[in-house]
Image (cartoon, rainbow, N blue to C red; front, side, top):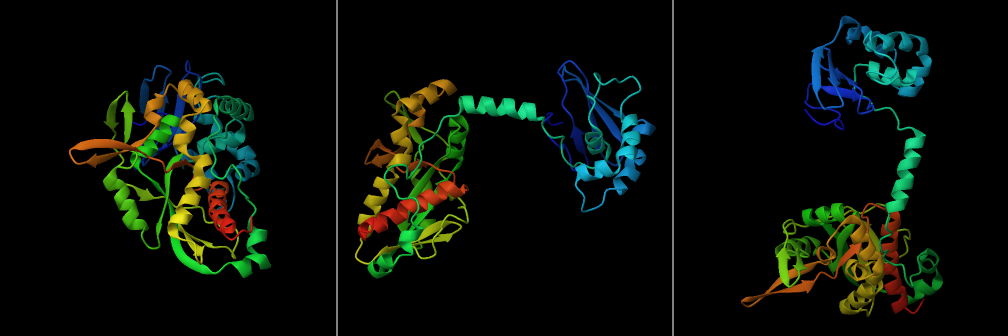
Length: 359
């Protein structure tokens, strides 16, 4: 059986669970071919018993039929207030009081528990949400942002200007991707900060580049003193889906695809010129750069993280000797966040606008 956070524990069962204090019993109503009641006590002992007649699904099926397909549960509860109260009351044992068994709930929440279908848990009380929010604010560490220094974020007016139309002529193409792997996912869970590989390559070469990252085990290593440690989970990278509204200007040099951004460089700009400037402007969001800051040191100490493990390297075989190279292209970014992706696009557009001497 799953723990109390699960909403189902087999294809035949689904549950509705209202948590209570640790020293009281909790009643869980299960939807199944036959009605059952599960009682889980504060000592984690669980009892499953066949439901009493007044607790069975048949007793509440009429209430379920009264819910219109287009209705929300809250609306249904208001409309069937009287019937719901009559039906929900027998769901508690005769010996139960509001401080025993399942805690007393408003009628709308009783309906949610009474209807023989898993729908949703009662909403968290506003006071609890406020307390959780305060705790999050207290422990939150702002991670570094790409495009935080010297970047023009509102590029749309420039890209729609006559000056840009006169200066820009299409040249070579590059592609920008965001990649992740199981190893980075594990690192994110430990750090509580999103870290991904952002890179650029020739047009149509993303798949080849992603495969090479896995072959190289990009970022798999860290130094435990002078001893290199190679971690698992870095041998298979995948492209991360990008937010669909990352590109704001239809006139600009950046085009969106779900797997990467296609960049058309200005005529005369070489790929190495673009690469150098792109890396330079991405530096404010560099994971390795941030790892050297006092803010990072405080974050690692607060979370009990070995700071050395956060500093990632790529193992490199040079003849018979293995060396480590800094994984310079790890950045703090959320691939599915519109604001983060728009900042990435702005960095690319700034590289090109600067080359054209428009900023």
